[in-house]
Image 1 (cartoon, rainbow, N blue to C red):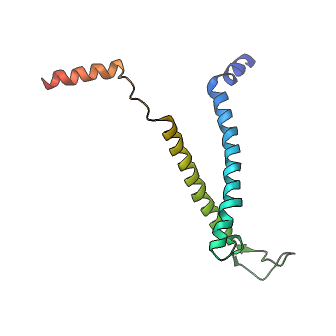
Image 2 (image 1 turned 30 degrees about the vertical axis):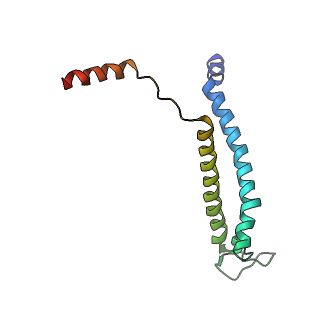
Amino acid sequence: MWKEFKDFIMTGNVIDFAIAVILAGAVGVVVNGFVSDIIMPVVGHFSGGMDFADLMIPLGDAVDKDGNPANAIRWGKWLNTIISLIIIGFVLFMMGKAKVRAMGAAPDPDPTADQVLLGEIRDALKK
């Protein structure tokens, strides 16, 4: 059983997937930092210095030790999350476009034997 597990772990697909997950986590930290430390302050500046995270609907009179409502619908934090999602999606879209542009268009692959045979059948049926 140990040998089977070792063979499974050492296959290229599992190692490639592990590397991709680790890199995705690192890229996620970088992009989240970009959004929260660079983009959101600019958005806040153009919205009059307002931090969306402070927007909420209190659901009672109870307050915490800092004087904030203890129970509230914090829709501003959710709005920040939506804005971050849109920005992150746009940044990833631009990264994908840059990758495609840098790699150039992929050449069309040669047809497989099955595709060649189907093409010949099609041509024969046309005659």
